[in-house]
Image 1 (tube, rainbow, N blue to C red):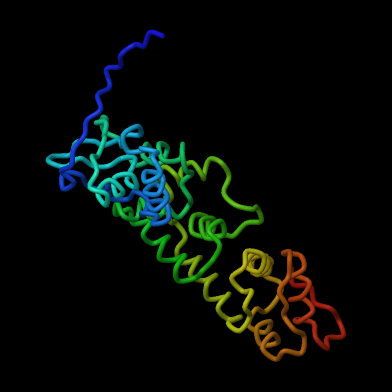
Image 2 (image 1 turned 180 degrees about the vertical axis):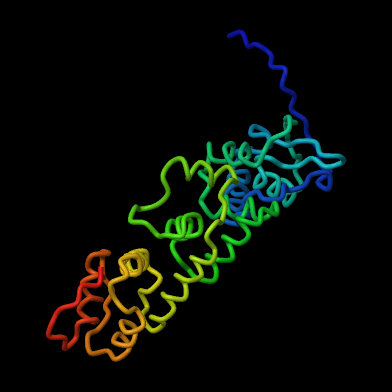
Length: 251
């Protein structure tokens, strides 16, 4: 069989200090490093036959793809086999990585936050402080409302992955956090279903939320974890109407 020679050159080096992990790439996975190391010990030389991708940045060779293989090479004092590529954006890096192992949402958040994007820094902080579901948080911070869909539409998902997510309704988001926090003793308060139910009630404007919270705290009718938004709405309406002769609609 005749093979056509490629113009792509593969280099190798043991000067580990010449390489640098790129800011914003995924965090290293110790289990993955261990697996690669074990494969090599068993005779599968993935380092030589799967070169890492790097780009030149001054005196550094920034690792675009293959940071786990690099760490294994360094641990085992092996050669680092690499290919030098042209400039890549963070989205290009994410796409390259996702070909073999899909990036998680938290990878994108960590990536752009590490690059200094204030919207992603504040998004990360908000998620940590509230433990709200991501789909709820993204819609709340970008639109001021929770919405009833299951998450982002494709257009917004693409913007999020490209680092274009923007926080436009931080005050509204804080107001929702304050409303949810009034149900402090309810363990299901940060679930997507409960947040959507409370948002529905707030948007309807048909009940006194402070009174609803007071009646919830009295505990005459228990607030229970539910599987759906509708079930939560029914449960909250029962709490609000305890001992009421005329039923009050809350949404």
